[in-house]
Image 1 (cartoon, one colour):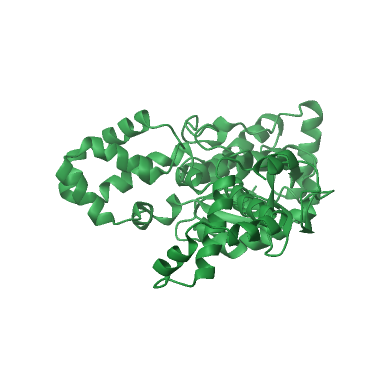
Image 2: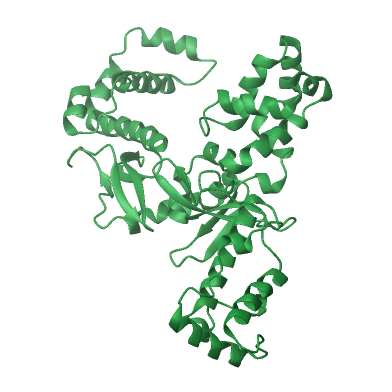
Length: 403
């Protein structure tokens, strides 16, 4: 039996031990990909000997020479004992694989409330080598980049070890033995809390002298994350794969920021499709709608997504939009409230503009920087901004209060 020539999708394998054994082998090969080791599984000879022993115990001749004869014998023997030809992990593993646990190599990773599937590949030099997180386009803007710097628990030790060994020798000497230093770091820092580069720098600050740490910061420049990433091999950087509604790949990269820049707008366009009854509308001149919820929870691609309703300044009007990032929603909502108040208080603001105290003197002093009308407009903007500074209204009552 040469398993390399068989597939669990072959018609004649839809039942019986062969399909079971192939599935087990595939599962254990997946463990090899997770642990990045090719020495877990036994070779074909060991599998041959397993079958030879089973055949010898139940077949008078002791040998079977054709696949047809094997299938005939298999069906007969499995009627007596369905598990007679079932391989066990112990039959297939050369070494204990208990250390390759789901805790160290999980099937999913959490980013906020999103649970995203992971794929593992041990393919040195290949674009897929390492860990790949798979997600639909619609959620890309909600992904927290810092989470993925930490990879999975089973690989983070190797990543930190390589980062420390890539430091200048004068600094590295302060951290020997490096494996012990890595252990201390992992014990002191909460896994996936904050950016890995910032956590590592904070840890090194407590290990190095003031002079050495300053030297390290100067060498890294302003972007410590980018400096660290340069020193990390590709398989220790998370790979990101975007899929469409049918599960087909749209794009993949190890740089999530670049993917967000390229696909972020298209992800926003998909939000309307994700909401059965969208609250989005345009051409709003006054608060003539129900209070906006802080969040809107939807189910999409078997995932729970959190959207954030907010106003958006359209220049001569306001729109209600759904955002996939709370920070963007809050920023745009403040701009929307500003425009809504400006529209509602148009007459009053014009009157205030005419009655600004000492405006002529102020305009004279402002001459080198701009016109008097510009200055008056700045005063009005300042008045409105001051009014909404302490409140980001989400309902008509809030707007009336500011008014």
